Amino acid sequence: MKHPDHLANVFMSRTERLFTLLQTLRHHRFPVPGASLAEELGVSLRTLYRDIATLQAQGANIEGEPGLGYVLRPGFMLPPLMFTAEEIEALVLGSRWVAKRTDTPLGNAAKNALAKISAVLPAELRRTLDSSSLMVGTPSLAETDVVDLSIIRQAIRGEYKLRIGYRDLQGNATQRTIWPLALGYFDHVRMLAGWCEVRRDFRHFRTDRISALHLVQDRYPRSKQELLKEWRACDAYQ
Amino acid sequence: MKHPDHLANVFMSRTERLFTLLQTLRHHRFPVPGASLAEELGVSLRTLYRDIATLQAQGANIEGEPGLGYVLRPGFMLPPLMFTAEEIEALVLGSRWVAKRTDTPLGNAAKNALAKISAVLPAELRRTLDSSSLMVGTPSLAETDVVDLSIIRQAIRGEYKLRIGYRDLQGNATQRTIWPLALGYFDHVRMLAGWCEVRRDFRHFRTDRISALHLVQDRYPRSKQELLKEWRACDAYQ
DNA sequence: CGACTGCTGACAGAAACTGTCAGTCCCTGC
DNA sequence: GCAGGGACTGACAGTTTCTGTCAGCAGTCG
Image (cartoon, rainbow over the protein chains, first blue to last red):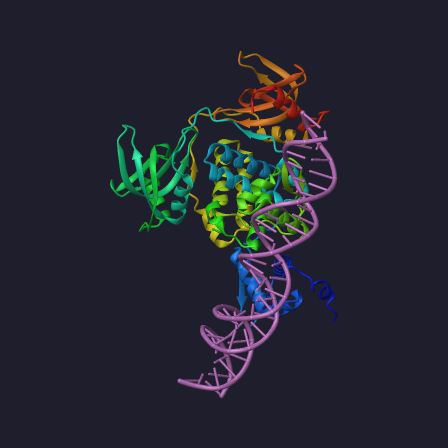
């Protein structure tokens, strides 16, 4: 019936409390009543509600189930992962390629992803990851983009229309609205594939020739998956 | 979704800042200067010092290296946050590149790794992973290997000697024992770098010209890391 | 020795956190 | 429909904490 933590919890900064709360939630698979969380943290119920709200604002997927309590839904933190050495090397090499041969935001994402994976690996595999000797060659030549490809990726993910300015191979500048479908990374160029509203057909565009880019808030009327299927059917590419 | 840009960082609660700081530190493998952390977080240097101290008090193993900055040593109680959509796309693209442009065993390893990652994703991110439209172009031309590169990788990882049969550019066939150090993936060829016992120097070999491969049970007498350092020092490659 | 870097101590004004209390919302039983 | 209760939110004021400034300390380098 003792509360061993209670005395220690008398002094707890808000920060420490939030970390503790997160830990507590993480260790419970089933909902924990707000009242007992509050007592454990040595804080009023009102403050507990506020702490929960703060963690949610940080992106924690905490759900309150009336009558039961709070649970931290999986998917907020990365659980431990296990790989073979070869899988680790594959991930490292792939990420290095992305970091070296695609645009900066995606390259950083690759590095960050690897760092996250590294953090949940057992020590042995972490060493494999850190000392991986698989490298990616420097590109002999690569066209550089003037627009931010992450906007394109965002549009593809969200199925948003994209308004682009494009200089075709003859040097003619055009403006079109397209439904972006896929981004292909070739050795020297990157190609954006999509449905062109002007031509009413599938088209692809070299990203280095896209001069302007604007994400239209409209989502396009058909599903990406469906369009991709059609595109593959009528296009020799990929 | 929850990663505001530097511009949005005009205001950040202390809590949010601490989480962000932790994330930032986790993502960097090398020390980050205090000043740049402070700037990134939009806060004075003094406050940054305090934030670091707070995290350390929470159990984070942050080390300050004078003149360099701060690093977070692994082993903090909180695992990293879940991947972002962009990170997933980076991993998918990287794995696709590995699957398409490297040898079969490594390609399969990439696919398996992705499957393992997929298994721990929340539904929404799994959908992102499954429907990622980032593709890798087919190689215009690629040399094919006659030997199994996974043996080379295994030798590199374990620091084992390798006995290889090699046809050089003039067509002369030779036999040598090398200490494999690194494998470089270029657009059309793959290069094995290592210390050649015959030449007593660093050499690199196109894998497609390696005609035979035998893993010697001897481990080579010096550490790979050390040799790599020397190799980089005396070789213009990478 | 002095300049410099990286960090800590002290402090006051500003910002936040906290418990109380009075609601609101929503479900349940009648 | 309506009363009752549990989960949660808004408002508020007293208190705590946080933050930038500035001065100072310990190493290090030249």
